[in-house]
Length: 89
Image (cartoon, rainbow, N blue to C red):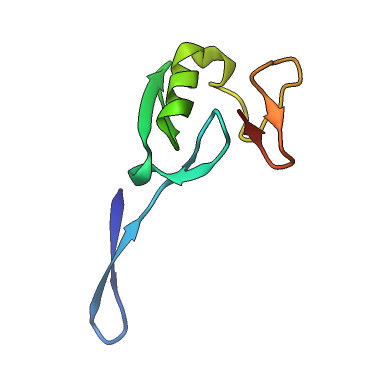
């Protein structure tokens, strides 16, 4: 998490926290990196998860989920189901 310091015209200081959002590679849910229920590292990239179940699914077969475009649906992958917005379990 990064913070920015803003000095406005009245010379008062405002501190703003910059929150980073990530997409869970298993279910596609968008979560803040601070509120992630789990983190895995695969091929030097960090992956954030909305719950322990998604983390376990990813850890059992990371190549099925890593390096895919956000929201990518692969009809040939039995782990992918489409709900109209993104991949879900």
